Length: 566
Image 1: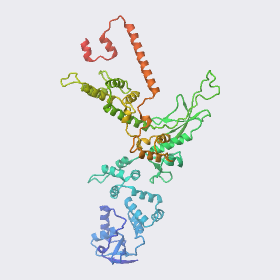
Image 2 (image 1 turned 90 degrees about the vertical axis):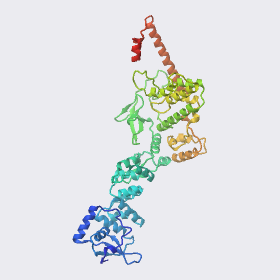
Image 3 (image 1 turned 45 degrees about the vertical axis):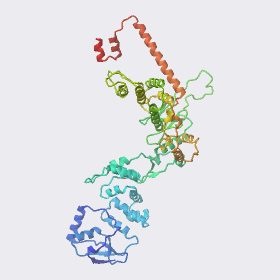
Image 4 (image 1 turned 60 degrees about the horizontal axis):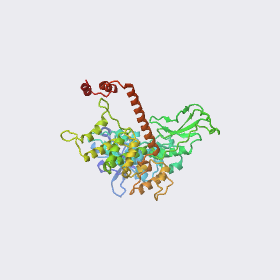
C-alpha cells in the first residue's frame, strides 16, 4: 500500500461500485466546497487494473474524485492497494456505509453481489455489524418489481409494512398495480399506500393454526415466512384461506369433545349457540356442553354452554335416563357458504338462459308467470308511495304490449317474449333479497334448466367442497383420491376441463319435503284469508257499501280515484 499523486481524470470508475444511486445536489455541493477549501482530507483508494493495464481503478472515493475534477485539481493523492479476492466488494460496502448510509436498494444490490461471490448471510451480518434478519430483509427486495426498485433508489421508499406487502406478491401482480399507480412525470412521489392496498391479501398465520403437519400436507398448505415481522414471533403465513379454514374445521371435527358441537359465527363475530342454550362464564360442570368455532382470524375458539333440563317423559322411552338436551356435533358442511352462493349464481344464469331459449308451451308459460309472482322476492306496490324499483323494471315488458298509437294491442309472439322477459327479471336463485325460493327450482325443473348449467368442475367451485364431498365428486371418474385434498382437486379440474360437471346440490329438482311444506303453508294461508273475508261479509251483510270509505280504510285510494268518487 502506497500513496501516489495521480491526475483524477486518469482514474477509472469501478463497474462494481456499491453506490449507484445519485447523491443529492446539496451533498455534492458541500463536498465540492470542502475540496476547494482544504483539498481531499482522506485520499481515495485505488487498485491496479486486473487485466495488466497501467491504469488504476477506483475502489473507494468515486464522489471525491468526481468533485476533485469539478474543482479543477490537476493532481490528487490516492492510496494504491492490491485488489481483494472479491474485487473489493465487502470493503467498498463497509467504507460507503460508514460515510453515508446507502439506501436499501443499493444495500440489497451489494449484498446480492457478496452472496454471488461466496459470502454467507451470517458472514455479511458479522462484517456489517448487522443482524442476519436485516440481511434477509434486504434480500427480500429481490421479489420487488425492477421498475419499483428504480423508483425506490431515488429516495422514495415505502414504509416497512407496505414493503412487506409488496414483496409478498408475484411480479405479475406488481406489474399490473404499478401501471395504475406509478407517478406521472414531474411528480416524484408514489402513493405506496395505494400500491400496498391493491396488493394486500388476507393472511392466515401458522401461530393461529390448531392442526398439525398431517392436515397441512393434506390440504396443500405451504407456509411463507414474513421476514418483516418481529423476530420473537412465528411469522409464517398462508394466503390460501379456504385450505386453512378447511384444515381448522377438520381438526375441530377430529378433536370435538363428547358433548361438543361445532358452532357457526354471525356476521358480527358472535357465536351462534343452540336454541335455549345459555353460555357458561364460570367453571363448567360435567353436564355442560362445549362449542368450538372459528373467529374472524381463523383461530379455534372454545366456549361452554348449558342446556335447560329436559322434562321427564310420561312414557318409558326415556327410562334409560338419556339426556334429551344432548347436542349432536355438527360436521363440516359438504358445500361452504361461498359454494352455496356460487350455486345460486349458476342456477340463476341457467334458469334465465332456459327461460330465454328453451321451448315452453303457452300453458306452461302462463303457469310459470303465476308461479313467479308467488316468489319471496316479488313485491307489488299500489302506486300510493313506496319503492317503485320492481314496478319500473317489469313495466318495460308491459310497454311492449302497446302499439304506436298507445293502444293495448299485441300478437302472440310479442306476448311470449314479454312473458319470458318478466320471468327472467322475477325468478332468481341467488342468495339474498333477490332469491325467489323454491318456486325458482320448480320453474327450472319444469323447463329443463339443468341442461343450461355451466361447468362446475373448476378450481373456484371445487375449493368450496369438503374432502368427503370432493372425493364423492370423483366416484364416476378415473380420478382417484389423493393424500392431499389440493392434489385431488387439481386432478378433478384437469379431468373436467374438457368435460362438464354439475354438482348434485346445484340441480333444480326441489326437495319433496320442502315443496310439500310450501304448498301446505300457502294453501292454509289462502283458506285463512277466505275465512276472514266471509266473517267480514257476515258483519257487513245488509249494510250499503261506501266504495270511497272502503278504499280509504285499506289505504289504497289515489288522488285521482278520490276526486272521481267525490
